[in-house]
Length: 288
Image (cartoon, rainbow, N blue to C red):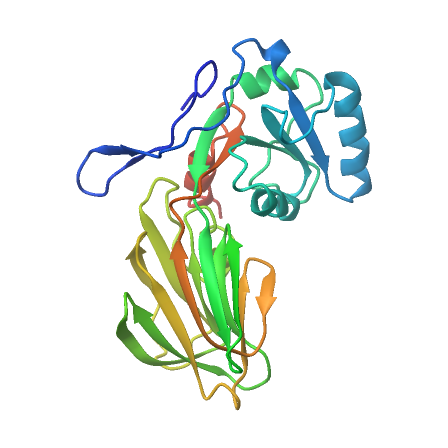
């Protein structure tokens, strides 16, 4: 999808209906002329990212988040997640400039012609998960996740988890190291390492994946509609303490975690032509 020269509205195909629905608010308007695109350059603390950020600012200038047209995140995937969480309500497209290790959400881009590549970029709109974690002493903490919401054991004791989908118990007891709920964008991250399914970025689905399941041993997880509300209840939570985690935000000693996709928050990622997130996820399924 192209977004430049007009206000882009987030459009998603309704599952099974073949119809489109528009979000009520649009992303920032981008100038047609690449020379007029205002960039906000943000760099991670990695030395190579700091140096690249300085060079980009010298070449193309630097504006505040509120004044820019596009945020350029210089670093790795971890830094991109930090930027997405911090500015997820800014309605600013974000272009990742890889100075990390894997760079799945980034562009392996040279310093030259950055505004032109941004003007020609392919856009992907994603939505975060909202985690509400309730601790065993009744405290409630919320956090947003781009990749996944997880429940992990804290000690040598395995976790025992009861799984609810939309208020209905679907698994009375899962003995495991943990369980996670992944977005399509996050399905190639920890979810894939836990042998969960890779989801196309346009799929209106979430992946519920066990981590080292012991009982029932053969359960491999479930694919859920994107609007499902998932509750993970920690059984014997004092004997078997667990943490609730939204990406890298951890809440320890939880009694239960609730997670759902937040469709009222949309984030736009920009990728160089031919390197869209859809294409990367497709390639990942054939990469051995």
